[in-house]
Image (cartoon, rainbow, N blue to C red; front, side, top):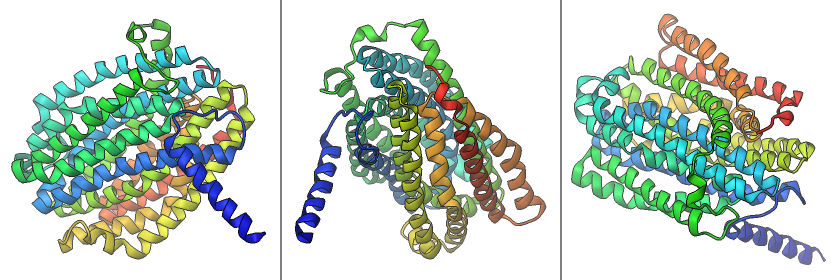
Length: 464
């Protein structure tokens, strides 16, 4: 009997896994919540793993070009967080609105919401592309880059910013698919983009140097976007976009803009804080910036799967609120937060005990390694808080309540983290470790605040 049950249990898990990786849409407003989380989380985690591999692949190959090249990537990525913030803000709005319409079984309006969100994204990308094309050198200078970094990295920065449209669309369209519960398509698009980047990165870096890394990343993401667009127009999922959906609809655009503006501001606040953290670190030299960059890339590599799991909470909240089941939506969030906390606890132990091993896989410079190891061990001490916090924040966003996390971020990042980090690093002479300590304390406070506000339940009353 025991053997039969175990065999049957294994068969069920593998059946669910196969279903999660192959299905394009399911109804997550009924049935087991744990199964719903599993079905959404598996492709979403794998999707985010691929997004994190982008960062690690680039820094792995670029790191071979020296500390100045790694510093260029780090400073450019710090500025690119503005692009990521806008992209995430728009994708959050798209996820929230599409999920709400899917929960209501209104698939036509769900498709229209995705198309209208794409219209907004095009306007933003034009502005960012022009900024990158004409002011790449100024941006690196603003971020604290020295003459050697500016001379080496201007072309890289220009390519990354000018081609930001592929970043924007990759995030946005995947947000549409996640809102519809079609997480598998989002996963496949990132896999395709990443495979192309892994192939192209060493080839183009060998041919063009540092700019080749930007060419590879932009091309890989562009191929992923082409795959997404095909499935939006020709796929078998419940979201089928037609040209008529791109005709501007003032009411829909206003609703998306309302959620997206505060969601974008929410992430811009956090991104600006990260940029200032990088700026503070840059005051300690290129080796410190390179070490910080490597540490952040490694941290992101393991944070992305947790982010994928938290995305499942956003979809479940949106669809269940659309189906008039707020209690089920809340229960989904707490279960997801528990899973994420367990995962992040394991990662925290891994980094605290083996930080040097991971850093040496990317860089062999002793000065760079020293900063990176301290950063990894310090920041990872707050990983359990990060895991719970990102689920709660995504739950707010999935409900369309992007204003609450925005106010949380505004206070803790700008009013607290920036002055705290500067004081520790420069006034109290703690150095780069002061920045890392500030990050841990801030993220922990954000989580505690988010949990308190989430329990009040006002997010259940938001209409979009």
